[in-house]
Image (cartoon, rainbow, N blue to C red):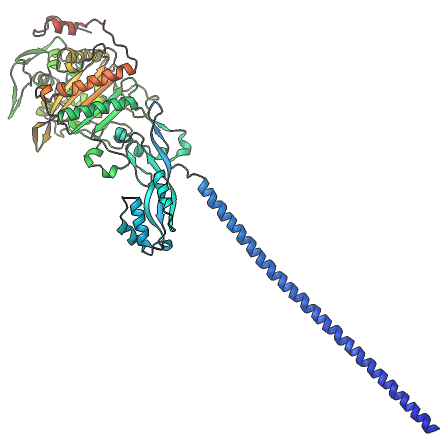
Length: 587
């Protein structure tokens, strides 16, 4: 029984141990499953986080890239939609007509790296633009360059044609172009600019800084030029040049009261859009840069200084019977009267002999002082970069005094002559010239050159020149034109060329109350049948001035007057043309 009990007890222990082992194994398995689940969950969590970080990172890069792309497109769109700021301001005439402006254009260029077939592209481009060399363009398109200009400043039609080629690698670049609506008409006044829009000549150069500063300019630059008068002057000069086979011409119209230049024209002229293709002679500003011996127009100053210095009066006479011989030189008259001449006769007949005798009474020092006082020995201050000073002898001797008295031996520009002549007719003061509207508004009266009395006397003598002297062809009924002719042989090779002359006439009207001064100078005219072979100032230049006055006076509303009685000098001239003055005339 004991044995059976013991055996039973042992079996119970074994069962109990087996049950405990199974429980332990089960607990271990559960623990292992928990650990496995923990690691699995941790792995999943870490993986998810890595994926999240990666996705977010790439999303941020994409967002930034997309944002940047949109910004670039916006900038590009803005650049295309917003016009380039103007590089230069406008220039207008005194009435507001545009003389120079800046327009937006497109230029065509190529990126050779984007051109698939350089030869074909070059042929198509050259066929569209005949001024493009196909062979040269093909060579450039085969290069390693990334930028090649094809044609700049296209017209709208040219841009359309280029766009229709449809060739990848051809692009447009927005640019600006300086445009001169009236072409050659004002080429020497306005000047021109370079490709970088920098002023290179004329007003464009003188006012370069002002024209570039478009924000501060406060509007266009208004010139004193009247486009209508400018056109008249150029047309009359052109007709005169063609009629007399001249090589050049200059015309200037000045408002006496304001000192403003209404017209300044030179021929030949040039296209300011293409100044490089013009010859040097065409780009040369004769009015401000060319210096010339002005011939008998200088007798105006000799006569004025004679009267103003009190050396003689209108009643006095000088011996013009015989030519003057000085060393190896002989001074004679073109139209000798072979008698004593009064001062009015000397001026009206344009006597060299009588003028020289007056100059000898004046003397060298007083002559020099007067010419300097009249602004003839310094550069003319005006708004142009192309200016020349006068040329005169450094050693001014007696012979120089004699020849300069009648306009030889001293060279000045046409602007010099206009300014000095105006000082004689405007009441006697030397006033500044200007090419800007109201350019002299803030300037006071200039220095006195001659007295008002001398100015009045000279104007009456100028009227006699037109009525009874060498400038009859300048007379315009009702407008009382006065002035002085001049004919000068051109200096050449140390002497003078008798076949190359300058024909001039400088005038004022109305002479009793001057409003305008007009100069016409024709370079190397040839006389023809209408002038009986003469090529002098009276035959060539005077009629041109008359034509200009006939056209511009009515335009400015100047009423012709026919009932003004002749003054004493003119009346005496009519009654006693070939006699010595018998009575004194004072004014």
